[in-house]
Image 1 (tube, helix red, strand yellow):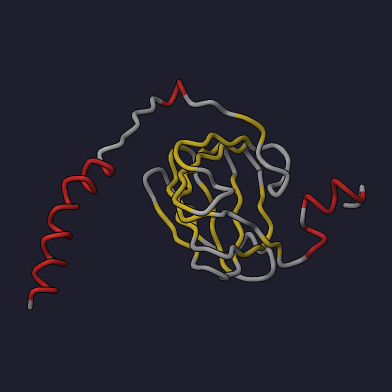
Image 2: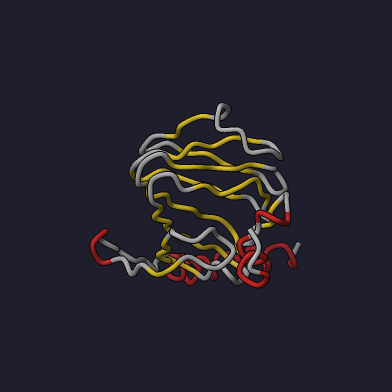
Length: 159
């Protein structure tokens, strides 16, 4: 009994400290985002802005990806869940190991989709589009067909 009372007291005593840690916040206006070239794992042409966290490390992250019209990310998977919200434009999203633009759904601004860890999926834009991705890092992308991987193309010159 004394042990459970002591544990309860310790938990209650730590609550204010925990809520202070969660009090950290950031406010970012769209015109203040710092955009840069997307990492080599994404096809060339898109830009990324990191809003929170480090997508390459353990822990939560939030990034935005800005892509031109007719941008395609071939079929791929992730080792963690991917959560995507469309900010502007439209992103077409479909599941499967083969790119087929007659399938899927156009996700409009404010729309959301989730790709569970290991789920084969692909996406494409038909107009300039901005998406926001959040999840637990590290973020990684594994292409279903290794020939679609832009990192391979960059090192071998193939494609």
